[in-house]
Image 1: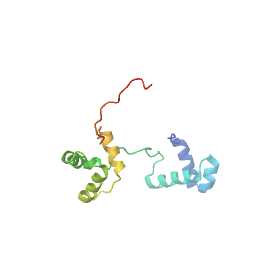
Image 2 (image 1 turned 45 degrees about the vertical axis):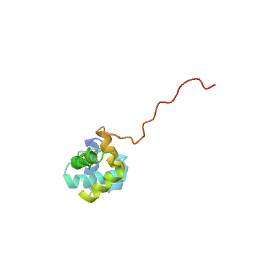
Image 3 (image 1 turned 120 degrees about the vertical axis):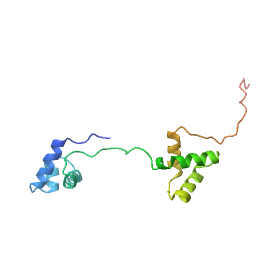
Image 4 (image 1 turned 135 degrees about the horizontal axis):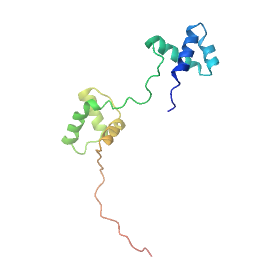
Length: 128
């Protein structure tokens, strides 16, 4: 993700708009996008700060609050599928999530389960 523009540029753009320049004209003058200039002005009006907002993912998961519930499901039924877990979350906790979300949640915690039947090793040797 790209770095945020500096506070100095933000201040000059917002001050130009507050000074009577249109958002479009201010954006052209400082060689930035019109939507960027508008967003900075709206942010300044709302917060009074010229500082950039935090970028990136907020971290965590919606499932963090339900970790205990999910672990209980896994302990109660070791071969439960992700779709079944999603169904239980919706029925019991009224939380609708995609099975992929549950998969990411479990993967971050190192919990995996392969439903593959054990097989004996393949024979290795010359084939001709």
